[in-house]
Length: 300
Image 1 (cartoon, rainbow, N blue to C red):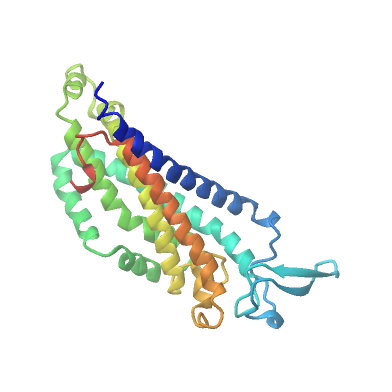
Image 2 (cartoon, one colour):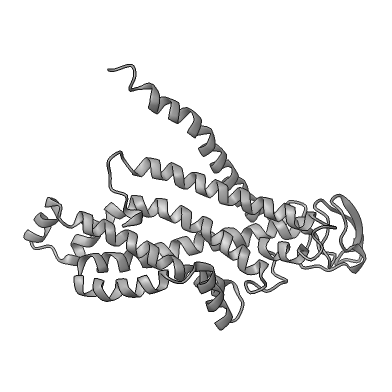
């Protein structure tokens, strides 16, 4: 074997492996934080304490428990303008952000897979469906999400639906491109010649070819969903203000950011760190599924 060929992949693997391990560690930590928030020294993220407004990180307050006892509460990340604990709201906000990211990715991939398979197989449906998809893609994702949320009541389901809609056309076009590339393959013609129905051919022979590109695309959809949810909540059109989410925590502190930057810095850092980890994971999946010389379906 040529000595000049082998070292390049080894060098690439050497510096990419730490990034992948970092991404997996960050996502595992975020998932643990979201699940274990009640046991990580948090208090009620909705509890308002007017006497402890805009306190710096490390401030200690006294609160009365349900049984009448007075307990000392350490506000590790300080408090916001209503006296709510930023640490608790940030940890509980991880639940919302991760739930939105995972839900949007799953729903968008499921709907896009079905529509893409049908559009790629039937040219008449393709002619109509893809024009609808092109129209949706012409609208900026944030603007379309704002319009959907404005027409519905604020809530988690409404936010998920608003973020899913802009992602469906992109997923549909990706799957359609895979179908168009796979349909001329000999094994597809052989299955049809043996009497297999189009639905069976799509499910058994065509759809599996889309799983790799969909896994890569799904990671980017999840990262985009986390960002868009934070943007919607930051603008005040996402989840209700009392709901602890990273966007709401940052929205509460934007007016007094210069005086009390801790209300934005902590949740903002977690948003950036989570999105970075998801994107790194997506890059690793892309390297796993896309072989040299293979077609790039994402831009078809």
